[in-house]
Length: 74
Picture 1 (spheres, rainbow, N blue to C red):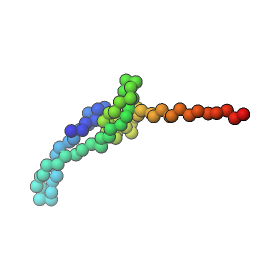
Picture 2 (picture 1 turned 135 degrees about the vertical axis):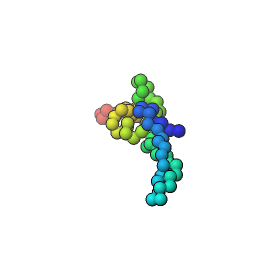
Picture 3 (picture 1 turned 120 degrees about the vertical axis):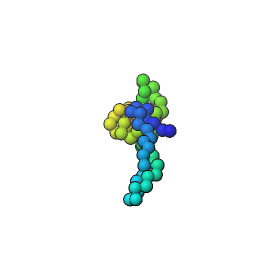
Picture 4 (picture 1 turned 90 degrees about the horizontal axis):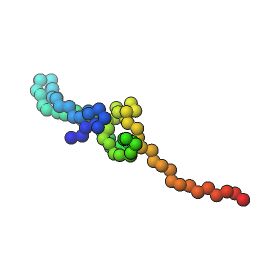
């Protein structure tokens, strides 16, 4: 199952409880995304929860712009 590589957040299990107090199993899934990030100076793909992304615990990899040739006007 998916788990955040930064904080370790994963699926939590519990019950849905109806008005008559019947309990059925259910799972709460975290909001996990695969993002390209800088880890130890290298660009790698990591699975991270949205809270770690928002709080800045992960530095996203920045795409390098394509080389643009600029010609001097004569």
